[in-house]
Image 1 (tube, helix red, strand yellow):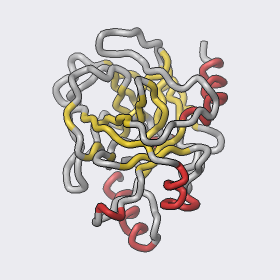
Image 2 (tube, rainbow, N blue to C red; image 1 turned 180 degrees about the horizontal axis):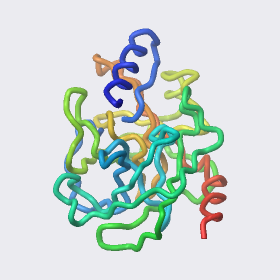
Image 3 (cartoon, rainbow, N blue to C red; image 1 turned 45 degrees about the horizontal axis):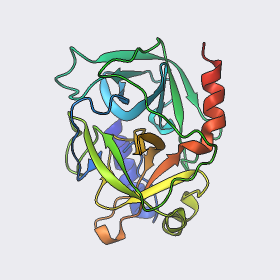
Length: 254
């Protein structure tokens, strides 16, 4: 199914100038120090990694809305570093409820944010914890700062997904320049973008964009170019835009 989706997207890309690739791995990354990012989770379907995600409370995982299709059942793997070798030590948890933002648009990927309510409360351990998110509604993500992303996705278009968690630094761009590149597919008020040496590919959607130990964005989509000089910026959902909704959902959970 994933291969079919990728082939369909490739076909569309040849016909539409700025068609976005979604459900996207770490480009030019290096292996993370094991368990140094205890908030990172693997979102899986049929025990196969499909997306990234991150713990924001003891029972909520934040990820991208496009990582789930109605009718499918997802599980979340916490405390993992090597998805092939850590099976005896990581925790697999079922998803109780899927909270997709009511304004999510699967065609434009606007409001590409989802909260996975876990079926049990997670306790902090040396391998599992949650990460802070912005506290101020619509808080800006300052341009020119160096932040980071991490995930188990592909490291190149021709490679398979990584067994071990990888990370790379990225540069925050001015949203005005992103708007010039993506035009109507980019929303200045609800998206963030990065460029530079690092990026993401298939398998990392839903992972966090981390600046100063705070998750400020969610990996959403990109547009690969054969010529690196024409590579469009990588795009993320801006978390602070949705703080009211996030607080509403978290407040309903007892």
